[in-house]
Length: 104
Image 1 (cartoon, rainbow, N blue to C red):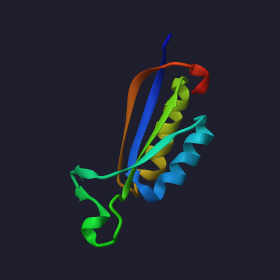
Image 2: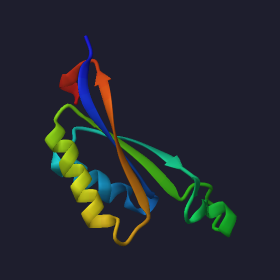
Image 3: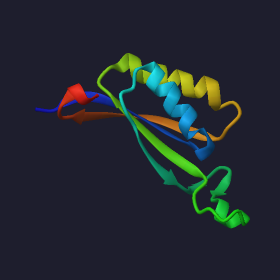
């Protein structure tokens, strides 16, 4: 049987990875998945390799899954109010279904 949960996805500058994870864990998240990311948006192509810094990825995509909507909302509010005024990033939420809700 699958159970409803929320997946909060934050795509932002990789320098914020540890800070966003710390914020989310304090909000009640029990874990996360992070992968390096690059792409193109209203600020153009986002890749340090193009600017000569030698790194391919300058962004990170961090995913948190929680069965508790209030935890998802705390993560959303915290990330947006704490970081998105000074750093680039996007945040979106997906409704997902998970097995073993106790893991989330």
